Image (tube, rainbow, N blue to C red; front, side):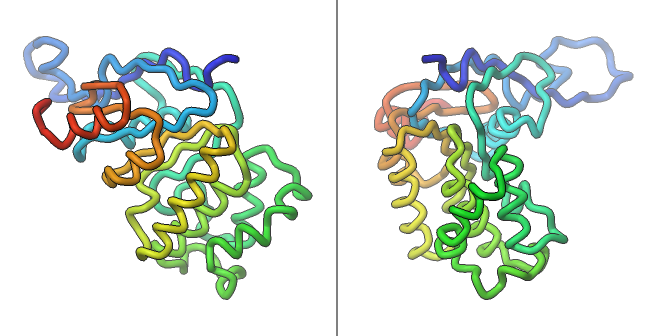
Length: 234
């Protein structure tokens, strides 16, 4: 079976002063990602960790086709759903109800398929009273609850999740963790970015530590988390 992510190598670079004297590549540009290459097999749950600015969110944006890499490429096999920044993928003028169907359409689902999942999505998100309110009036917590419910219940083969536990109360975080365990047990492929090391250890088969746009270690989860907490790589 082919891997959903294969031979990933990508970089984003930002230009500096065009009139400055010629310098080396590293002097001229700040690379968000550099020489990053890895493979994720079908059904793996992989944690992406690192300090702020390490390149984690940029990596998921490239894999989601939101950001085009300056160099390199990503090969993706399978239907993909992503939950990145709060509200990403939502149309602010549409209601919660309409955005559920929009999310299904983006994933290539027919209306009948979304209908079968609709009640479960609404029940999980706990936004039933605001279902016919435009998303632009939702709080960040409501946005996250609905986005997570859509991402997990519409059953994409590959899921990209960025800090889904950063917003919301303790009860909802526990609910999300349990749902993610269910998703993992169903054999779906997940890339999970988080600063919550307990969640990473509980959910992920392995982890990748990024620092300054480069892979520091790609290994068994506990080893990678320990390396991250030690700060020896900085």
